[in-house]
Image 1: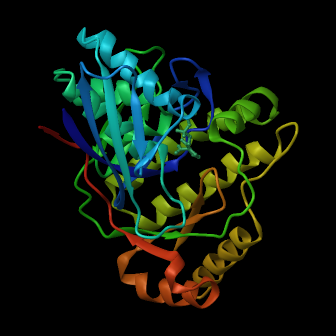
Image 2 (image 1 turned 90 degrees about the vertical axis):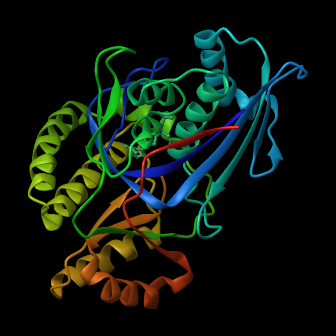
Length: 323
Ligand code: 2P0
């Protein structure tokens, strides 16, 4: 039996498309910031008394269909370790408010850590990152804290994350703006597949990411928060252009997303530097130097309400306990 705690991450240079669906090998590299305020803790117990795998998320037992991705990771761990018992998986998402920012990144990173350790495997961080990748692409990066790069590689061996700067020693901060969502969203998995298959801009996206990866690593070296934020904002808009230009076209934005984008632009026009990024949903994350936090929070509170804002610092890498 083992427990792991992994934090979610937000990509500053996005992953949006797979080269290999089964192994989850991406089309491009990506780079993210691990967040302190959002994490998952998962306990895995391999037990010879069990007659099937049992998966609990936030105390709810999942049915067979919903457990599939988790069982896939358990099967990989059984194969690697030679353990043939079924397992009980107990996973809790820790998010500061109820308004969903639970993430497959922290979930599959914590699962990979807890399951491998419970099975007696002592995986290196690189191999843990490779195992987490098999559950969800973004989980590859949640093994490490701080600023993290996922090198796309070409196969299972060569596709893993590595830390760029684990202890972030400059005052970058991220504000999650939890936008109301009623519509059922298009999963990242099918959204990115459709973008790769049908967007005429996909080739250009590969070139954009290669340039952005080089530029953002320079900006990180220089601890230049404005340049990091600018690159992240442009990269996010270009990723979302892949959804609009797919056939059929779609978007993750809603009206509130655009309202928050406008507010960030207004702040910037008034000399308060901040930048936005969005993922496969309508929430907006704002990137800024913490000296600007108060002004940004005040402005956005007036628009959307204080209870839908969560300030987060850079967070740590995975922790695993054997019990
Ligand atoms: C990212 N996202 O880099 C990008 C940006 C969302 C937008 O990774 O199919 O849940 O499990 O590999 O990791 C979300 O996609 O997709 C994601 P799968 P995942 O963070």
